[in-house]
Image (cartoon, rainbow, N blue to C red; front, side, top):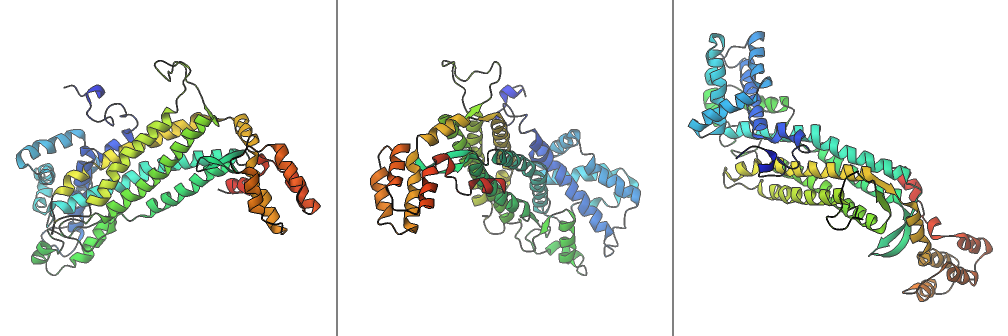
Length: 455
């Protein structure tokens, strides 16, 4: 069939292709190949730099540049050549090794180095470092910037609406008021905590041979400090060194990474559902787009589709992220191959996360606050002042304050006048009574404004 977007099996390569574009150079098979070539070339250069390997003299500056260019200039055509080699080897990492040997084999000055390509490496030495580089690049280039844009937009809305009173709802029932800005500030604080944890996570890697013991290394060059050499190499890639592994790096770091993204996604599902509800209550209006249709049969509809799209895609992402976190740290004995096929789906999870983040960003940008609707809800909810009145009564020792307010308000309609009549009859100091008489639902917001402004 055609490679047209309409025939794509995954919506990430079809309907949502433009939204997932930033991740394609990282998590595609091309992205994996590119990083494998990079790791192989850097390993070869590192071996040549070490004075203990007499059979591999140091490369000249021109040779170093030539080798680095194989990785830096890696193209789709190069990837296709690797696939052609793989058709014979039936082994993707071996195909990368042969590709590099092919590129340097016709150069007399480099030909001496051919058999040091992939020296003492198991495939997983190359793979784990390549996937670690993919995760590192995705975090720094795509995910953190996308989360930061959401945080910045929510902070902007929190500050702009810091003083705008809003009726709270606990258990779906009217509750002590907040401000719209404070409710958004809560989300900012939660996201910043998860963002900090994601940014601080180690991205571990290893290069220690077939079962993690440097067997081939030590038998060939027993005089070299392979543990120190390997640590320096892994850290030179910008990764964190893991000294204890089987054939595979155990993927605990991948699990932690996926869990961190999943927790941030859960917070944003919570936000998307709340905003959806506030739109339903009329607290927000959504800007209209010319020609857009909300329903195929009901012309009046302006649906909260961006928040629904975000919720759905966060859910898809989290289903995969949860599987990665639970499955990848488990491998039979010194290794099985179940992680290999699972790791290839990493981009799908982060692709759905990115689609969700972009939908959420778009939805937040469409919102307009309906202050009149917020005020109307508050003005119809004088019962929420029962907390304020009974707490002041407690201060001044009035009998059974909670019970009196419960009898007055629970399950009953309370008006401005009935609440003020009750306050007037209380034996309170004049200043305390006056403060309660002047109180309105919209004025009963505690420290919400300052909390929202301080985020």
